[in-house]
Length: 283
Image (cartoon, rainbow, N blue to C red; front, side, top):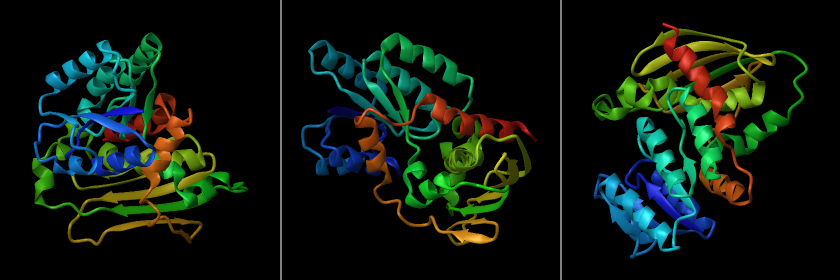
């Protein structure tokens, strides 16, 4: 399988590069405005590199016309560019494998579905927590009562964060979409659709609220506060759930599932994107 990658210099891209290598894929082209992409030498010395998206797009089109097109485009770019980069992949007759969130605003998912139908190519999303053994165990559990869930997640960020696209609500969707989307997807996958939700606090570096489903009442807290230690904790009926470890190879499991003809797509991503948008606008 031939892969192209958008966003090679980012925080999450090494997991995609490792996953592509693990499934036997070949990386043929990469796009990133940052030219600090020496990491690519671990995966080959003849990978086409482009700092300008337009030239990258043209290169993919050229490869396709020469009968050497890519099969997948992996997308690790900033959130607000995901929609455009997914469209680029599909226009070039490649499947898209896109980091969360697929889009910031849920109404963009409908147009994406139409493009899937027009091109015959799929849009896959990376929902790696669904492959975590402990989360899979919770998903399989037969809930006989409405659980009381408390989720606290702190991932400290330094001063750089407020100057980057990540702190720009228009570009990232804010903390709810940029950070919370991982956890919201996990919660809805395990406990079912959100019947109601409330938000009590929403700032650049902290947010907290509640979600009610048929199976659980969830209190959650997200923060980026550098004075707090990193934490990822969840209790269900006051019993701790350990899902702090076991993340090393989850992206590889995602890629294996996609290449096996499965994987999660647009409709799988929709509930958490809709929930984040509801919470974001409930101020």
